[in-house]
Length: 251
Length: 188
Image (cartoon, rainbow over all chains, first blue to last red; front, side, top):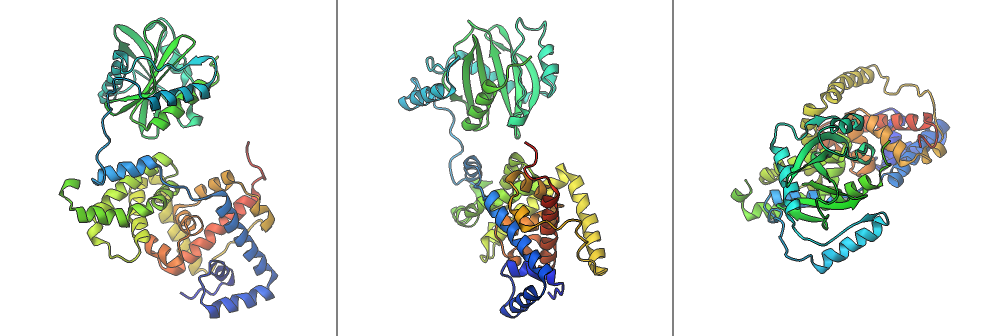
């Protein structure tokens, strides 16, 4: 390694990679050559601004857990505990979430593990196993929403969450009980989220929970019950739910 | 399969690989440009590392892990972003031509002040780094974001230290030019 270009050596000097003899030589050149000194200032400024603006971030905890499970360092993710009652902790959490989400919406933590939740999960699982998880595949809500016309009584609320990291994949008709409902499918990273919109009267939204390893978040807005189900982490699903609820009403 | 591995391997994996998960994820994210893809790459790399844990010589765990992550990322890029790797070959050829012609540095159209560089925000920096060709990007990220020294970078990227130095200098020069020609503040 014998780089002779002094401008190349400045980088190594700034990085503390030069032996004392070469470092002294570069220092001498820096003193003699203003252009070289400016180069050094730029490189140091760049290094500083990178360190300030792009702090190192940790790996997602869910990734560490997945890897530990994959090599047998921790048991595979436990299936959902079908608790008979919502625990105090869960209840407190859902109250906190309700408080966070504010007015105009209700988060209810009333009926744990109702049949509807099972059906929502079953629909999601079936869709994942089918050739296509959607009947209408489009990332354009102006394509997806009209598709439901004539298929179900009320067109679903379709919002564009691509900028939030949840691009729209499409939609399909699911059946909950005997009611056909609109289900939208959003993608988050490599995972899919099924969001079923159930007209009023059919169902009561429950607290966030888990069935068979799938996370579920449900809420009610304007008399429509929403069920989001996915194998993404509960926190991601919460983020999705908040983004969906916060999205601008469509026109 | 995990069940066939001894507990020794698991313990070794826990002490060699897991401490460097954040670095692994960071490198994978910069190479793939996407958090979810980075998770997939890291997971794949960790499985490879687990299978090959017996082959780790015990010198520099971080460099060993990052080498595997980089390899997994390249495999991923080859499958999903083959265009970005095609560019690598061209770039290497270009780089060789330039260095053999002694033209290690192009004339910079602009030479921004250090003051302007210092004002760059995270978004502009990220965008500028993401635009770097892969060999430059990985060298810069390993050095300036992840803090590896030249020898470690040379080990991870499988090139001589002199090449590490020239790639790093070029990557920084491109960033400096890019930040200098961008309008301060950038898009809203």
